[in-house]
Amino acid sequence: TTAKAPEHAQAAARAAELRHLLDYHAYRYYALDAPEITDAAFDKLLVELQRIEAKFPDLVTPDSYTQRVGGYVGEQFAPVTHMARMYSMDDAMDLAELDEWLQRTEDALGTGKAAYTCELKIDGLGVALTYENGAFVRAATRGDGTTGEDVSLNVRTIRDVPMHLAEAGLAHMGADRNARIEVRGEVYMPKGSFARLNEEADAEGRAPFANPRNAAAGSLRQKDPKVTAKRDLATFLYAVASTDPLHVHSQREFLDWLRDAGFSVNPNAKRCTSPAEVHEFCANALAHRADLDYDIDGVVVKVDAFEQQADLGFTARAPRWAIAFKFPPEEKQTVLREIRIQV
Ligand SMILES: CC(C)(CNC(=O)c1ccc(Oc2ccccc2)cc1)c1ccc2c(N)nc(N)nc2n1
Image (cartoon, rainbow, N blue to C red; front, side):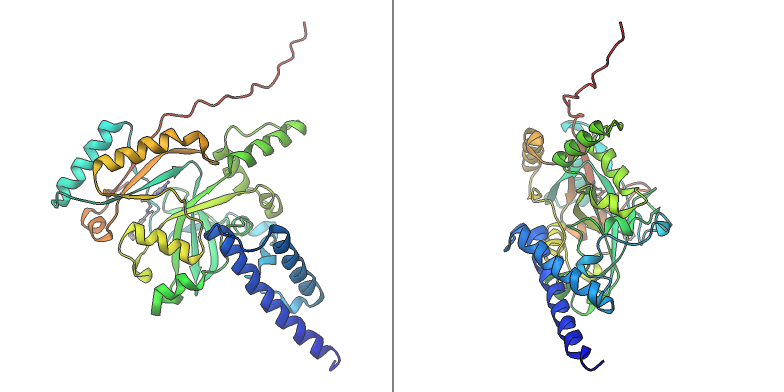
């Protein structure tokens, strides 16, 4: 066994180095959208780690990048109670209703001026991701807002979901770096992946998915994580149940923290300091809707300062400090399946 010791120790050291490298390069790629190495170089590191773990199984750690796709089928979809309600939002169906909300909000705040953070409303599936001591511990669907389904094994296969929080995010938490936090966001299927998936379905004579949202929902509900892993799902995070451990004081600061921590955050968010700026953001989002690689169904306008959010509070159903400005359904050129009529 002494002969084995140096080889094992060497393998253990290299495995730790590879785990760190893979996490760093995944962070560069998914959170910063600024990769330093090619995908091929990344895959080479991953294969090297998989080989070491195959030779020395005791070196496998749960947060290792190689553990993204795995786990047996039975343990999925158990009911999960969220740390805090995952609220929905009131809707504004047109600019007049949006202006009513802006006016009502500014009156309620009494300050005359409020700043808002405008975000794209991704047409996907709401999920809650829970981290403890900086490590991913669970993912759940939104469900009815209080109780969702455990989809941890499937969410682990989504490449842009970090298995543990990056140091830049943890450092911001100071003494609370080990706190349990639950972030919320959307799981979506990029339009390109949706088109490819439906081409495959067509080629195999299976029914196509109606839209990317349904395809994302179907992919998250897969019993076998190996199938989910092939569905090319992605995320954008946008909320947290309790902001205390993060020591941030506005939605804009929070979105910056999410990036620091390694999460994928939609790059089109903007802090607006007047209703006119909010209108401009909405008009611009609608104008560029078709150019995006994901479906959106509107814009979410949020009071930016957390102190003002706390002043406004929640109704039974939704926060008073956020509104969903809805876009009309996008007319899509649906390719009708050829129908052969036997004449
Ligand atoms: C605003 C919020 C409803 C999230 N916020 C929450 O879920 C939430 C929940 C408890 C909170 O704080 C509490 C903590 C404990 C008790 C009560 C409230 C705070 C925020 C929401 C919902 C859907 C969104 C969407 N589709 N796209 C974008 N871009 N943003 C969205 N934002």
